[in-house]
Image 1 (tube, rainbow, N blue to C red):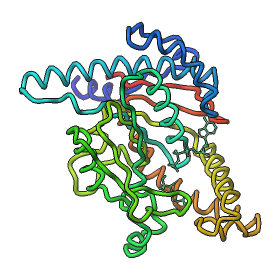
Image 2 (image 1 turned 120 degrees about the vertical axis):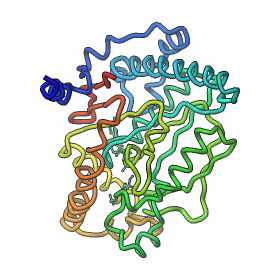
Image 3 (image 1 turned 180 degrees about the vertical axis):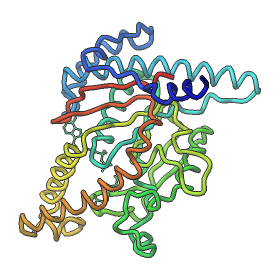
Image 4 (image 1 turned 135 degrees about the vertical axis):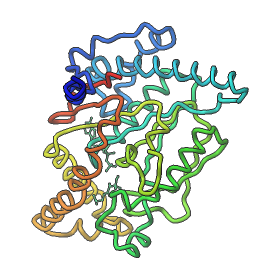
Length: 316
Ligand SMILES: Nc1ncnc2c1ncn2[C@@H]1O[C@H](COP(=O)(O)OP(=O)(O)OP(=O)(O)O)[C@@H](O)[C@H]1O
Ligand SMILES: CC(C)(CO)[C@@H](O)C(=O)NCCC(=O)O
């Protein structure tokens, strides 16, 4: 009896899956967002990745859902603060976004930041990427990890956990290194700062991972965790397209990491792009990113052409 119950538990789905049409119909009549959110359509023109349909079908219900969780988290923090006689008012609400390289995490993060900014004009909304916690190329070379960029061992995860801890403790100013896709490296001496936001969006391929020799996941600091999901063959297309865009941008820019490659033959370029996708990014996706998907509270699934076709929400 107990054994069969256990078996049942194992097959119970963790998520409820909603088609785009089903998701569109969710509407939370929270006082704080319902009025402002009706004007979100205005934002479409400000963001070339955002369509009128995306606002209506995907982001409007998503913002309502986030507002609900944000209010609950706020209330819980206040109550806990009162119980322990501690000031918890400075701890931001943290939204984490994970998923494959080139699946569109930063694009989702940017759209969300704009929409949240617009919805809560009196709140400070910031976003950042965990790319800044990659070891600089010099250090990666020293460790023999240049072909492992993006794998768990290529990040200074201890520094990332410390960063998240400081953020959650509401430290006044927290800084982190800048990573540049153009130079393909940490920018020497350049730090970004985060100054007590109300909402922080943290995006990166490693955000749901348990760092080696650590007891704590980066996602333990998240109030809401989103995974952006898509078929690897689609992601590969987006990766190659972005790679070609990097090469076009680099054609006349000798400071770019892609400058030399930009002058290769089309065949050499195609072979290189495919090789990097399969040996590094797709291997990392299969071995280290996809297996963390079930730490997400919500999964955004994208199909051909980046069209969001399903939203899955954790049941418990
Ligand atoms: N909704 C969208 N419509 C059209 N193109 C998109 C959309 N979302 C993302 N893209 C394109 O897909 C590519 C990957 O997107 P993005 O840079 O946001 O991915 P990422 O997951 O943050 O990648 P990485 O982890 O490598 O930084 C980019 O070229 C981006 O312009
Ligand atoms: C910086 C990361 C790891 C994540 O954004 C990724 O974009 C990357 O550079 N991966 C290494 C393999 C490649 O060049 O695509």
